[in-house]
Image (cartoon, rainbow, N blue to C red; front, side, top):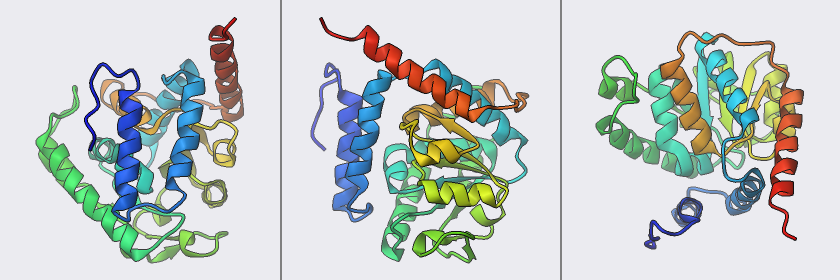
Length: 265
């Protein structure tokens, strides 16, 4: 990995790009992964690379719904594992839920490679510091996180092809699925099955953003960190009568306000 000085104003963004490039070289990502990351990065620029007020509200709602869920599952794709796999594992350890690898362009080699990377990340997370406010045995909680996706035995009704495959013990039986970087068709199919879907998507205009139960318009690692903070500091939060369409309109207004405030001339 190229050394990027701490003084570089875009260090975090450049590090993310390098992770995507290296993951692609290892065969962990589909050919379109870099395009997807670049699109998300462009929207993050429009947000000012920050967690906006509307995203903060969505993060609090997501945390409340995760706490209230009977069987939440965190679904991850290749980009998510590379960019925020450790954060996903920390979140799963606090929730006591599974993490399932589920890919749009599915292949056994990519799924197994991502599961192996998650195992590597699990070791680092278990040896690291526990979230402030967490009660319990941190290492045990991390090691108890179930990693799924290698042996699909369930099909998502309404989808065709490899992306319809998942596990019955994970996504198949979940009542709430936290899905970063979702595709719109799968989001719609999961909602039609009666599941709550919390999507993390930097594009407030995407089909997944519009179809989700709750959409967090934020970068995935920031969103995971925000949800984790809410879980440990506000464990008694309860879901509201969430209006996702209204929240997306607020996100677009924040983008417009940011652009206006930074207009040159």
